[in-house]
Every structure is written in C-alpha cells, then in structure tokens.
Length: 196
Image 1 (cartoon, rainbow, N blue to C red):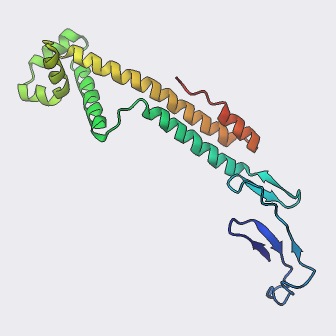
Image 2 (image 1 turned 60 degrees about the vertical axis):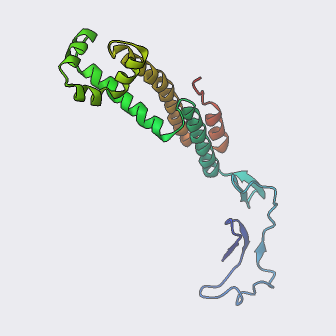
Image 3 (image 1 turned 30 degrees about the vertical axis):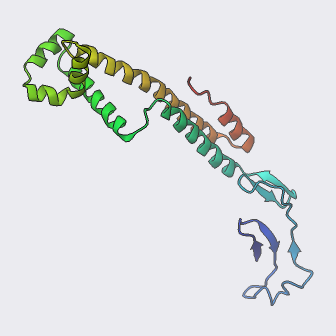
C-alpha cells in the first residue's frame, strides 16, 4: 500500500499481506515500513519528487502544460493588440469584410463593379454596402470604391500580422510537445519568434 499526500506525492510504502489491512501489517508502529522524507523545496506545479534519486526533478508533462498555456496566453495578448475592443466592433468589421467580398464579386475591374452597382435597387445597394455608402457620403466621395479599398487595406494589414502570430503559436506548441525533456521543452518555448 502507498500513502500519498493531496498532491499525489508518495510519503510512505506499507507492506500489507494480500487481503490484509495496514493495521494488520503493523501500521503505523512496525519498523518494517519504509518512510520517505520529502524535502519541501520542490515546485509542486512543475516538479515531482524522485524517490530513487532523493530529489525534486522537473516533470516534463507538467512543464509542457505550463509552457503551452503561456504560449497561448502570449499569442492571444498579441492578437488582441490588432483588434479593437468591444463586441460591436467585431460585428462591424465582419460586415465591412462582407462588403469588400460582395464588391469584388461584382466584376473584375472597378469600372465593371461600379456599373454593376447601378443595376442594384437603392434598397439592395444600401443593404449590401451600408458601411461603404455611409463612409463615402461623409467623405464626399461620389462612389464607394475608395471606402471599400480602405476597408480591404485595414483588414489585410490586421490579418497579415494575426496570421503570423497564429503560425508562431501553432509551431511553438508543436515544438514544445515534440521535445522529450523539460529542458528541451523550455528551449522550444524560448525559441519562438513572435512577429512584430
């Protein structure tokens, strides 16, 4: 029988005959039981006590879990620097992206697209290009092509950086998982080069 603490660290091993109880084996007074003195200097979150070696050692699985969580937290923090806070902004950006896609789907050139726009009824044009029409009107622009170009440029710049952050996160996590030792896992995490 093995006695452990709440963290699962083995504190004692008791030799109990098959079908017996610890008390029948002399627990806790018999000298035949083996007790371990576990130094309290180990880091419970990342280390386990090695009884054979008599010391705390890094546990690769615990180190891996901590490193992956830290990588994901850092990636999320970096991605959020490219996003405007607020739930409504996400909805607006998605709507603007849909306007860019709808605009580009209307033809192969700006001239073709602007001609196709004139064939839409005012209600359909407003529903499909609500944000571009509003921005063009406030800027005094006669058509929405400049507004659409601004929407596309903003999205492209943001997505270019976020996609590189996502790639660094995924490759970093995979490298940490592939590393065999705690030291190699730490080195893999430290080797991540985050895009600026």
